[in-house]
Image 1: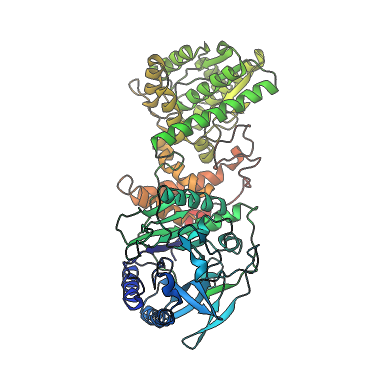
Image 2: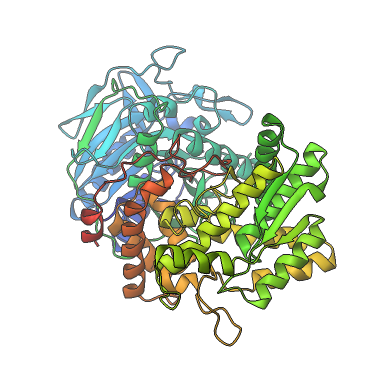
Length: 639
């Protein structure tokens, strides 16, 4: 298994009601196609071997015997395949008939799972034929029993199946149709027992609005239970005497829709790659996740295939919703979190003034926007926001003018303090050559600016608003005790790619004068402007030095959010950014990210307070606790 990816599929063969021989051949055809597509787990609909709508034919001994005979044929045909198949069928046991699923792999039946919740209302009258397999109203699982099929003793009951017996082997459980939306569902117990994937065999009738409802429930279920869900509904071939099956199929993982077949689309099969490592890492991180290991686990001795190409997409900007409407809603929500956090801090320390170092760049622009909102919420005058622009050796006319115009349009006060003379004097004090453009040359400017901001805040009884963002904290791209420090960092959990989108959102809802300024700031290259410009233009571009923020934010998301291994991050990054960056460039910047992330922890260990806005944050007080001396070599060597 490569990087934890398990290829799952769902198929709705075109069957004939009560013709088990015909249906078994259709099932076998689907098995062959799944094998060609390197599928690891294939799910069929409920009662797929007979058809769900057999009615009183389920009471015919001939149908049941024919079904068992064809089950044996399917098992025999599976011997030459390596996929695990979950096939629905009526199964007789101890004088009762159960709506069940057979789990088959490489010529063996590894278990028969009976349905627990039998619907008996509306157009569903399964209780006329089938017995529910439950121990009590609490849905505690019965101990697994054994039944004889073709001379073999097969586990019968509710159980979990594992691909092999390794600690990280993918696991799945089986439920049926109505159990997706039922109050009484076996899936909760299966999840607690360690199942990562729930396979739902269904033959639910299609009515208006039902298909979207199923997806809504599955999305919420997989998010709540940190799992994947494979839903497979019966399609063509079922009787339409009183209802119609649509062939709907979908695969969710942790609230994310990986793949779907729309109702009545005619598509019989779909595949997707479920990331079982992602599920495992999230469950480890959430210590409130309840587990109950009393459920029987059946080990299937088969190896998950090595998939060099994966059937799923990763967004290039994982912090930013792809849907424009959701993106706008997210930006508004983030601004509210930032502004309300700052408002609370201002009120708590009884401060009615704020100080911001305004550079004309993206980060300080967002900090000013947030501060203006916080002042509005607190009923404070925006003129008490003191913006200080501090030009020095690297300042360009473009950023200087934008800083001045922005402060005016926002309604903040503006003070200009040129720091050239102070920095030159400092160079003389420490014996530094002004022509030597090294780290001392750069950091002296950053610390001089921070000293001015802090002292001016003391003078007016104000609070210094930090402008540094999450991406800079991850990379340590900040001057220690310079721009690294503030009294409240409003951008502390906003990655650079997200900063840009929030500023753009605010520009889109602003008047024309402010919009014009903000869009020019958006078009300005990201730079600390600590080195002299060339021909009046910015000479020091951050992304030329540390790498593209688009890549670093991608790396950060999967490193922090899911704890992915470096080689897995590299694998998905090379797939996601194919045609944008070469594989060698991605590998280079991933090594840079890992090295800087580890070596710059000491800056994060003493970072200021700031509001958390998303699932990825680096506050040492709750979100990321790491020794500053941790060694990075094994992480970089792995790629």
